[in-house]
Amino acid sequence: MLVETVKLSTIVMRLTPELYPFLKRSELDFEIVLRNGLEALEAEDAMEIIQYSISENQKDALLH
Image (tube, rainbow, N blue to C red; front, side, top):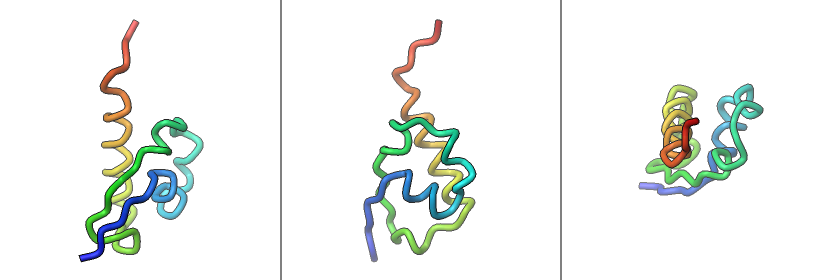
C-alpha cells in the first residue's frame, strides 16, 4: 500500500483547481496523508478532503 503525504494545495490544483482561489493559505498548506497515494484520488474524494480541512482549520476560530 502506497502512503503519501501532500499539501491540500496539490490535491486542489490537480482535481478541483476552480476552488483554489476560495481557500485560505492555512487551508492550502494543510498536510494530508493519502492511504493509496495521489494517483488514486478522484474529484469527489478531493471535495471530502477539502471540506474536512476547512472544518479542521476553523475549530479554534472565534465568532463575534
